[in-house]
Image (spheres, rainbow, N blue to C red):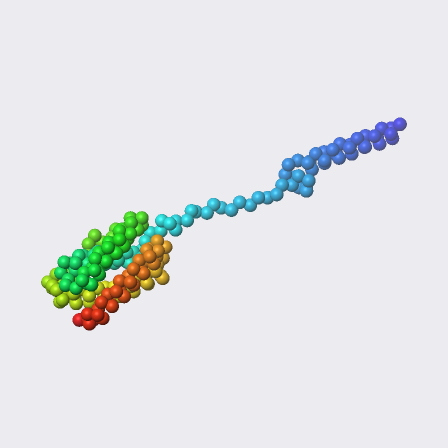
Length: 204
């Protein structure tokens, strides 16, 4: 009789241990495959790109600061030519300079506002010097001097805008250079043809 009681007690004890082991295995976080949850890896948040608000520096800034007064000078010289030139072709070219460079100047001003760039408010001393010399001339003498000035100016313009269209860091400055370049090339070809017709050279 006592043996049966002992055997029953052992079985009961084993049953309790089995139940405890089963309960521990089903607890959240316990090692095992039944209730294991996948580990989710989270990537750190990336800082927003500032490409659209990039500050214009270096060559891009120098280009803008040179293009603005250069364009203003060609507008002013065009106005002078429309008054003092003798040739109808020169006067027509001068009117185109006023229209095209005024338009490009407004586009450059808008770009400068977008980029928070302060452009020079006036032409440079070298431009004022050229204006002063041309203002003393009239008729055919003025025509030749103006044409020479425009050939030299547009050769420099095309070179500068080509370089900027290829090497600009700021994409908006690059787009402005690319957009304006064909017009400048057209101006250069026109004034070169006029110079050949008038038998004048860009170098006095």
